[in-house]
Image: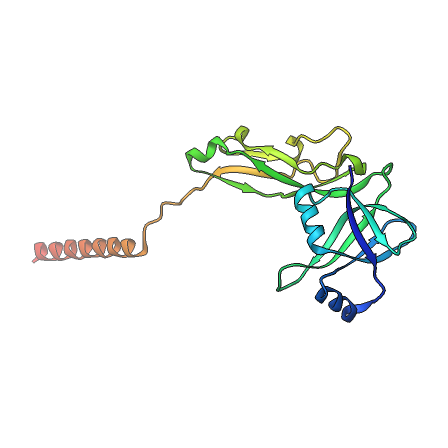
Length: 217
């Protein structure tokens, strides 16, 4: 089910106009994927609140003031983060057809703790999102890995993940998602200890040489 978000047609173009809009509390954005591309602004606080509540891939019913269409069903496809300050610089929305499949990245979350952690195992997550293809109405909010079933020295691959039967995974199934392994610490002698031992060995050899020389005399 789509959630509502309001927007407004954006007239200005370029960095200067966008900078002014952000200073006024608006987020420049664009909608593409439909019959025509639409430049607009949205309230960044409302968008952030929506994403935090519904998930990054939630369906959004976008009502744009001044638009030729009363509403557009979209998903947030991409966003640009400011390189220094917190907050977004720009947002890209993809207009979707509910009868056509789209490609999205779905977050992978780890739930629970592995039994291997009790034995010194370290959890290493190699993959944080899964690239899938499905109908807009079937996009999962996230894909879960039950860590309580992952043992020490076990690797969970993409092929082990449980997804909906109508969801096509686009990543390689052999790719590792998460593993639990024990950190192997090499038992190496400290440099000082090695030097001391070498000195003791040299001293012993010198004494042995002196003893042999005394016996010859």
